[in-house]
Each structure stands twice: as C-alpha cells, then as structure tokens.
Length: 184
Ligand SMILES: NC(=O)c1ccc[n+]([C@@H]2O[C@H](COP(=O)([O-])OP(=O)(O)OC[C@H]3O[C@@H](n4cnc5c(N)ncnc54)[C@H](OP(=O)(O)O)[C@@H]3O)[C@@H](O)[C@H]2O)c1
Image (cartoon, rainbow, N blue to C red):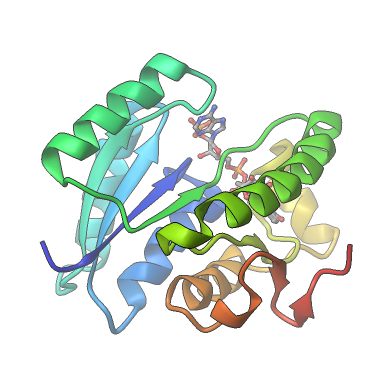
C-alpha cells in the first residue's frame, strides 16, 4: 500500500471527524484509519464518508480503540499491524473533563517534548497542534461554544491537514498554531 496511512483516534465525531474530511479533500490520497470507541459508530461514519466523497482515492477503514483501555489499544495495534503493517502518522483526538482537560494538555505538551527527543533519530516528527476554539461537542454544547466565538471545526481540521502534509515541519517539537508557535 503506497498511500500514507494515518490513524485518527476519536474520529467518529468533532475535530477528529473533520480531520478525516480534510484528508478526503486533499489532492493527495491517504489510507485513513478512523478510530472510535464504538465499532458500530465507526462503521456508520465510514459509510457516511464513502457516500460524501464517492470519487475520492482516499480509503477509509474503521478501527475500534479506546485510549483509556490498554487491552483495546493492544487489540487495535495487533489489528493494524496485521492488516496494514505500519502507520505513518497518528493523531490522538480524545477529550476529558475541564480540570483534567487543562492538566492533560499541559502534560501532553511535555509528552510531545519527550517524544521529540526520544524519536528524532527514528525519523519521527512530533507536534502538538492548537487549531483554535472550534464549535464541536467539546464540553457538551456545540451551540454554546459557537455563541462563545468557536469557529467552524473544518477550519481547524484544514490547518491540521497542512501539518500532516509537512507545511509546518520547520516547527517540529513545538505547539503550532495557525498564526505561529505557542509561547511557553
Ligand atoms: N474543540 C476545540 O476547540 C478544540 C481545540 C483544540 C483541541 N481540541 C482537541 O481535540 C480533541 C477532540 O475534541 P473535540 O472538540 O472534537 O471534542 P468532541 O466533539 O467532544 O469529540 C471528542 C472525541 O473524543 C472521543 N473520545 C473520548 N474519550 C475517548 C477515549 N477514551 N478513547 C478514544 N476516543 C475517545 C469521543 O468518542 P465518542 O464519540 O466515543 O465519545 C469523540 O469522538 C480533544 O483532545 C480536544 O482537546 C479541541
């Protein structure tokens, strides 16, 4: 399989789903692994995307994965190894409660810095991407997010596609924003 293989977890809804849509809109063809906690949801979204982009050369396939469940992660790893043999890029898009959320984002920045150091000699590029405040179901109320100024998640997803396609490679190891780099 020559296409880049991209795993997007938490992608049956919200920003994850918009990232998959942005990949479908790309001029490049990808193999997208659409990760979801629910296999049924993932399959239904795969059918929806195939109907939405009938002429695309991008291929989408569902993968059941719950990032809080080690067994589920191991099963997803085994499945992807067996069926595809590799993953070129991974985009974890799961979320949590507000205090845990803030702490987790700070922790994630540090994890990204650690991965950058550990993986750089393996040719792996690591980023955190801050796509702006997006009108998804984050926090439980998409409409309220919109009233508070959240923008269309497709805008954030297009930005993430640019990072996927190498336009921000010079900012590897940083938290990248559309308007630059996030200061620490
Ligand atoms: N919205 C924003 O403004 C914004 C901005 C920057 C970054 N982000 C980040 O983007 C990510 C997704 O946010 P969102 O705005 O798309 O929120 P969302 O609409 O609430 O979607 C969250 C997604 O995460 C999945 N998920 C939750 N727990 C999971 C787990 N344990 N394992 C696997 N998937 C899990 C959910 O799956 P289910 O459907 O199964 O519940 C859902 O698909 C978050 O990390 C958030 O911090 C969002």
